[in-house]
Image 1 (cartoon, one colour):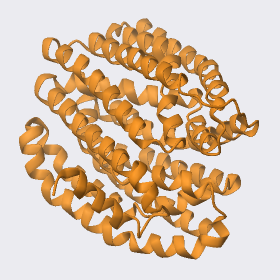
Image 2 (cartoon, rainbow, N blue to C red):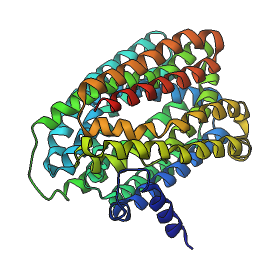
Image 3 (cartoon, rainbow, N blue to C red):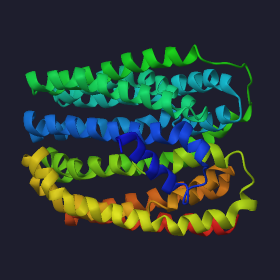
Image 4 (tube, rainbow, N blue to C red):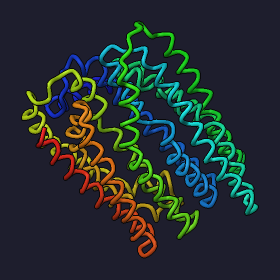
Length: 412
C-alpha cells in the first residue's frame, strides 16, 4: 500500500468525525493534508538550519521581529481570508479583488507603525533592529495581500491546487533563505531575504490565481464580514504575538529562541489536523440546526483521535530534538507540556460551525475573551515564572476557549 492510499484511508476514517463526505475528501482532503505534512517537514528543515547555523541571540531577535509583525498584521484584515473562503464557496469568485484592495490599503497603517518602531530603535542606536523593522514595514502590505491566493482555492474546494501552490511557496522561500543562513548570521540580511522571498513568490501565485477566476459574481457583505472577523481575531493575533515580546523584555533574546523552538512545532502540528479547512466550505452550504446533533456526536468521537495524537508527539519529542535541534534540548519539556493543547483539537469543529453560521456576537465574545485572558496571564506569569509562565498561560486560555465554544454551540 503506497503513501497516497494510506493517507486516503486516514481521511476516510476521519469522515466519521468531520462534517464531510468521501467525494469531498477524494477531491481535496488528500491534497490538503499532504500540503500540511510537507509544510511541517519544510518548517522542521528550516528550524534545523536555524538551530545549527545561527546563534540563539540572532534567532531570538528574528522571532521577536516576526512576532511584532504578526501583531501589526491585524491591519492587513486577516479576517478577510476566511470571508473570501466563504464567498468563493458560494460562487462569488470576483470578491478576491475587493478583498485584496481592502487588505492592501489597511496594511499601510501597519507599515506606518512599523516605521515608527524602526525610528525608535534608530534613536536608541539599535541599528540591526531599526533596519529590520524598516524592511519589514515596506514589505508588509504586499506579502499579506498576495497570500489571498491560498484562501481562494480553499473556497473553491480545490485543495489539490491550493496544496501544490502552498508547498511550492514555502519550499521556494526555504530554498532562498537557507543559503543565506548558511553564509551569514546577519539579522538584517536574514530578515530582508525572508520578506523579499515571501513577497515575490506570493505575487507569482497570486497572479496565477487571478487568471483562473471563472465568474464575475460579487457579494456585498463579504468585505464587511471580513472586517468583522478581523476585529474578532485581532485580540487573538495580539495574544499570539505578545508572549515573545514579553519574554524578550524580561528574559532576553535567548529565551525567545528557546521558547520558539517549543511553540512553533506545536503550531505546525496543529495544522496537520484538517478540521477547520475541510469542514468550513461544507458547513457553509448546510443548515446547522438540522445537523447539530450529528456534529456534536462527531465532536465527541474526535477525542479518540486527538488524545493518542498528542501522546505520540510527547513521547517522540526527545528523539526528534536530539536529531534535529541538539542545541535546543532545553525546549523539550516546554514542547511536551504544550502538546497537551492538541487534545483540544475537536473544539475546532464546533468553532467552525459558529463561523459557518456567521454567529458574529458569539464569535466576538470567544475571540476577545480568550486572548484577553491569555494576555493577562502572560503579563502576570512570565515575569515570575519565565517561559513556564507562558506555557501555562497558553494551556489555561485554550481550555477556557474550548468551554466558551461548547457553550455557544449548544445555544445554536
